[in-house]
Length: 173
Image (cartoon, rainbow, N blue to C red; front, side, top):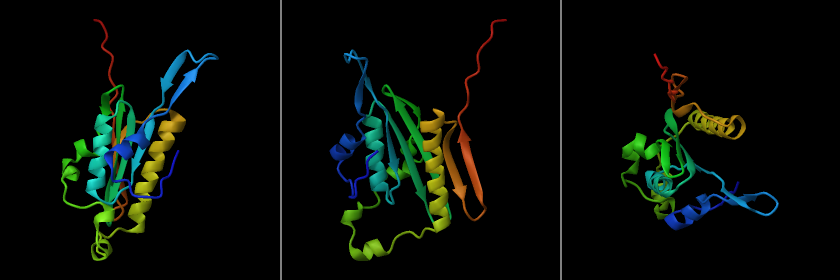
């Protein structure tokens, strides 16, 4: 796990940070394996989401959890790519409007623009954070997830998951 206390606004830099580690198994390093990175997008602008989306689409192996909320509502989406195949769609495929370049990177904002941001309640931030932590727990501790995305409202105290469908086995008649 790493924390970088700066804005990441360059695709190459983010790709390098999201690149999975490789490791070997066995005394003589005869089996080389690649880990699976998890990119957590807790960004407040769609330009940064678009950058994360591009990294997800160009990665062979990546879990991308995106969290976004307004004052009372929000969503958390978990995209999964493994061996170049997308198993769960990322935020940009589920909500294509977030890929529209309608805003700036945080470092491109003037002081006046930064001061006038979309309001967010602490309850919405906490609910979004709880959903992200739940995804991480399910992935790292339980080894799987059953929910592709979650939408929520703190006004109605409602959390609605989109559950993955399990494949049914066909039986021979």
